[in-house]
Amino acid sequence: MRITALAGGVGGARFLRGLKAHLDVVAPESELTIIANTGDDISLFGLRVCPDIDTLLYTLGGGIDEAQGWGRADESTRVQGELAAYGAVPQWFTLGDLDLGTHIVRSQWLAQGLTASEVTGRLAARWGLPGRGIRLLPMTDVPVETHVVLDEGDGAGEKAVHFQEWWVRMRAEVPATRFVVAGLDRAAAAPGVLEALRSADVVVLPPSNPVVSIGIILGVPGVRDALRGSRAPVVGVSPLISGRPVRGHADACLSAIGVSSTASAVAELYADFLDGWLVDPADADVRVRGVETAVHPEPLLMTDVDAAARMAKSLLALADRVR
Ligand code: GDP
Ligand code: FO1
Ligand code: CA
Image 1 (spheres, rainbow, N blue to C red):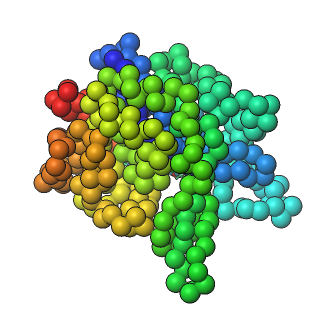
Image 2: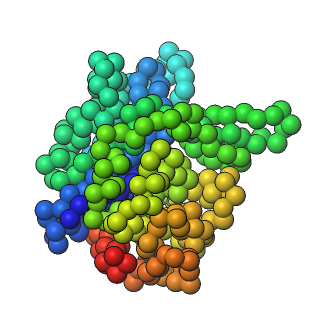
Image 3: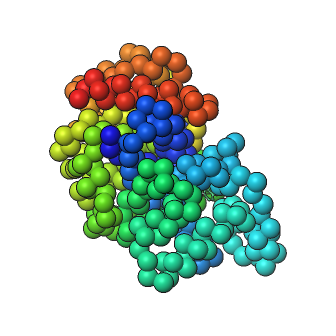
């Protein structure tokens, strides 16, 4: 079975780790292709940082800080301490020492002329992904960055900041009016991305942020059309339960684009290509025209790998039903 997933960072990675655990038991020969959001990427201190790709690498490769959901386990911040001593900024973004190894080698390979896809392939090899039937692709090889247009309410006009500054430094507390990804409408999908969508047996949308993770990938030319034209069922997991994100600030992102924070409103965003939608028991009343909904028999929470694997099992059963 060929499964293709679109994914952001923490929610996507935790779900796909569970999906992989489930597949290892029921369909060990299956191939999982992950199309990762790169809109969160940022250059800091001359280094290219790709948070969603790194979260996927570390989670699927066994190096993630479990409690935090991003960054490396057993991490330290000695280098950042030195940067602070020099007065180097920004200091609001944590750069762990082990994590810096990834940023340094990625930046070196990019400077040598490798594409983002090639670099991601090398990083994935180190984390053992190809050997386990997992292919990790950036959504595009073109460097794109999500920016957030702010409404600071001071009458000073529009101001935009990098997504990470809004998310991490401002904790998404300053209202956003829109998200802008310069160049995305001209950025070609990375090699293999559209083919992976067209040739999949199932396309899955993990519980990733619908606006700044999945929404950004859907903005890559050709991706949305490939999903609309897909012969495979497209099924997704709600990232919202009872009108609230499980973690992060998806509610602030949805409100910026004028969409309410409910499991049904998120499914509506995907309604032109979505076949099935998995929701929490608390959202059992969700109805979306043209989309088959299924209620997971327990809370839709990835409390551990087994819980995520059970969510994946429910999702694949739903895919079979709508096929
Ligand atoms: P990010 O890039 O690190 O923000 O991660 P993603 O975009 O992949 O996923 C973020 C989304 O995952 C958030 O909107 C959360 O509500 C959702 N999420 C995280 N953990 C869970 C969970 O256990 N269950 C469900 N249903 N959603 C979750
Ligand atoms: N999230 C934070 O809240 N604070 C940080 O300092 C931070 C650093 C960081 C470094 C590397 C990395 O891969 C992820 C990091 N994250 C941090 C997570 C990241 O900002 C966001 O969760 C996602 O980009 C939002 O989708
Ligand atoms: Ca992200």
